[in-house]
Length: 216
Ligand code: DX5
Ligand code: ZN
View: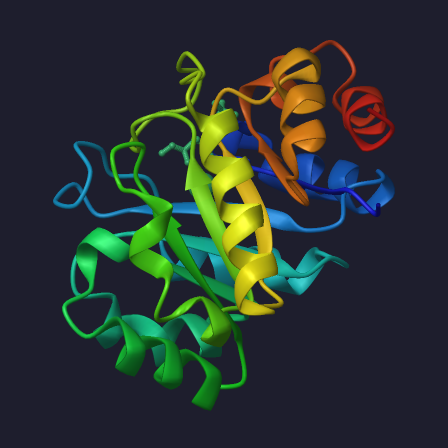
């Protein structure tokens, strides 16, 4: 199993973002996770295109962009142009999800769908074979540093079963409250990618924390 770690820059030091990205470059992190929030889909505003453009210039890792926004269709091209490699939209924000996934692929990006904690994985039954990634939120989206929601483990097991049943290729990414304890149980349940924000950036040694997650 080749576990991937995708540190969320939501928890980074924005007054020293270049330093934190260089740390990620030199670490065992696989991707860089961007939590884009519009203050409408979630009760918080984070950052957008200018930050992603700036990071794209200095990072050596794929950009894993998580859109916690309404009307993501209107931003597919701009996020591609800013450097996104993986673009994940929320199931709950898409009226025509099949069309949205097709549009993300047409722009040359990998396409992901994120599910809020209350959204059942079964709803992906008719789209799972079109997806490169499913992001399961293990906190209610909008803020880093929240408490991990325990029933996420069961959702991972159900999603893994759906992927196997349908012969799909989507990877399972988990986002929110990830640390060594929750991360270990998530990997046992079938997770492929762990997003970690505060556990990494609030630690004394972020690169060392990434190493410990990578070798969980
Ligand atoms: C929630 C954000 C957070 C962030 C990670 O909207 O998506 O989950 O990525 O937060 P931590 O790792 O600090 O819980
Ligand atoms: Zn995220």
